[in-house]
Length: 467
Image 1 (cartoon, rainbow, N blue to C red):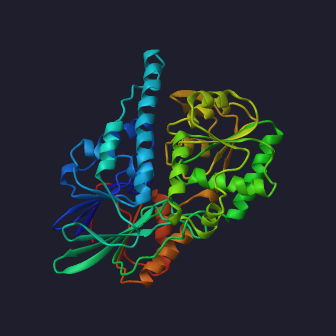
Image 2 (cartoon, rainbow, N blue to C red):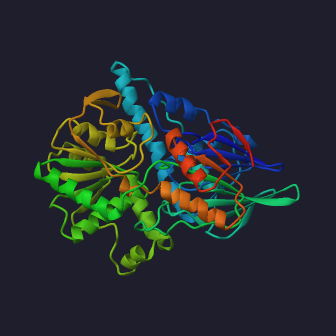
Image 3 (tube, helix red, strand yellow):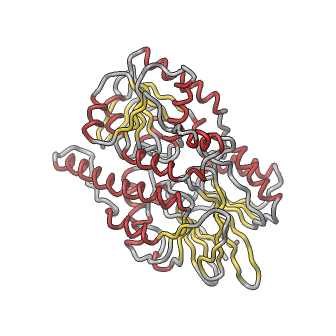
């Protein structure tokens, strides 16, 4: 038995890991790579694996960097089952369709720039279309948490709650090979304890090999109370100077968490009288999916829903769907908070809002999630004086604020605590760190070694690790 690392190896995006046994090959996640436009196009056009050789796919959750290449996988020859939780399947129905539409829309826009002769802009072709997404949805097999199911010869799958986003799963694979059974656990993206909306991550029993994410392996998140305070202060500051706050947000989970936090501030009388807009048709659809899965909520959020009070609504909040309303909002100079996708500023309506606001000092851009290297979001975090939007340069005068407290990823202490809890419940032999840049992985490795872990790997893309 061995693991082959195709994506999210010493980087954060494009999660793809292959489990090879003497009887089967199972693909863990199939995500899109996000980064420099030219590099992203090249990487995403090459899956890095043979789709026809894969017996089954296990999807940890619906984020596009974990699910976004599934249509390409089927388009290129995979015809097996894709296992996911029910909530993940419902979210993928919205998210993958949205990804296909955004690819086509952005390609049309960029190609118009090319046709006009804009320098430095290269033509773009979508990776897949809506029909490819429909095929993915038809191949999905949904599974509840904590119920084992054989998925390939000698391989049994059990999902546990990862507490990261709605429907996210820790993947437990019990592999029978050579007369013995070994358990491989893949965290996917691991959530944090005591966050709003969702349950805490579960801890698996009997783990031999732990494949663990390491996104925030070198830092700690601040308490949610401090994050809410900082959000209230920012809203007041920008309102008083007559500006807008643009929040690039992942449509799944992050947008709902921000809305929930703003609702709490509004209820406490700490939000200035400025309207809040969620300008993302995908976020609207995903919020509807949230309402279908109360089994994923923690007690507080579920109590709100059972009391007929939605966690995702308050009087000043408006969800925008139409293109016309989005354009009008982008052109408006009225103080407002605008939440829009995508979270790393690599596509979608947020690019139009950034283009309209970035050059004015009264505005602010609030970054609330991890930004992969070479994305527009990372350049904003670095507070560069000039950035390119839709391939064209724009001077940045808007204030940039980063609040890591909204992150749905476990921080360094969470990851160390999880590894120790796994070790306490089984004969843990080996850890492989994925979904993290080299510096966080080095820091996390050092902390784990301090706690007595001895076999820790940080594999590169293309590397194979015997397990």
